[in-house]
Amino acid sequence: MVDIVKAMGWNYVSTVASEGSYGEKGVDAFMQISRESGGICIAQSLKIPHDHKPSDFDKIIHLLLDTRYARAVILFASDEDIRGILNASKRADQVGHFMWIGSDSWGAKNSPIHQLEDAAVGAITILPKRATINGTSLTFCSAV
Image (cartoon, rainbow, N blue to C red; front, side, top):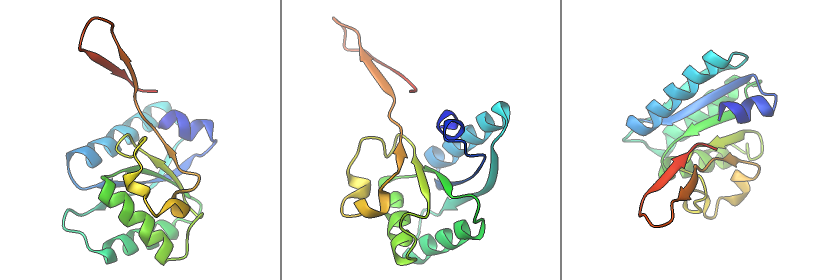
């Protein structure tokens, strides 16, 4: 994801994570790698609470809008939380404002954006490259 941000020429981004191991560790790893590689500033790092309500997503969108030059948003979130963020961007009439970079929890899935396709247009998502070794049931994964 750091490589994507750098390739796009973005140097000021925000992060949003689902509360819990996946989201928080994903953002921590992104922040660590971005520090090591240099050239990327994290405008803000926001967390979606476990026991969220629609107003929590609205608040996150408004906080993201507060840093107007950080339009790229790195998402380490569950399907449900991605849907919540996209819905909140629609409620705030901000479809197209943010450039979403979704982790592998979004990847090739349709469920996070089902009936929210307009809010997700232009998003970049990642999916680990997988290769199966013939004659075995093992699958090895590497980041793309």
